[in-house]
Amino acid sequence: MFNKNNLGNLMKQAQKMQENMKNIKKEINSITVIGESGAGLIKITLTGKHHCKKIEIDSTLFKEEEKEIIEDLIVAAFNNALVKISEERKKRLDKISQGIPLPKDINLNI
Image 1 (tube, rainbow, N blue to C red):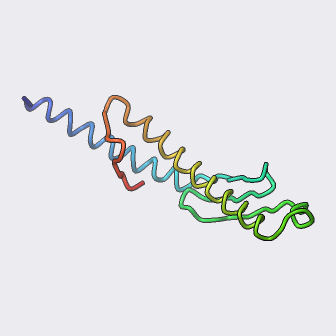
Image 2 (image 1 turned 180 degrees about the horizontal axis):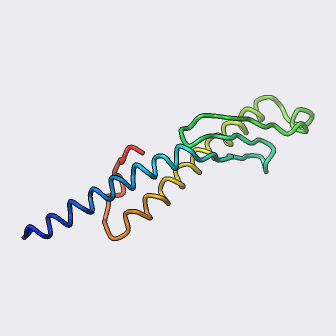
Image 3 (image 1 turned 90 degrees about the vertical axis):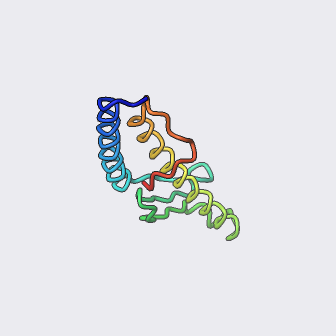
């Protein structure tokens, strides 16, 4: 089944993938995304480490909306930012795993 050359090549690929995943983790940790809700009336800025950096609420909301609606919009913006981080993570992992089938539910801890 496996000969020495195949095993050696597989090990090299695994090492390269591990190094690429470390680089992707660094890249993702350094990105900043802005999640939005309410057509941009609420914006939340998160880092790739899921740290909230900023919340922006359009001043018109305080005149037009009730407190509960504003809070719901904040939650939606935060969740939108989390989705964007996940999408970035997936895009970057897809780049390095081309040709190597990975299970869809694999947890690479990045």
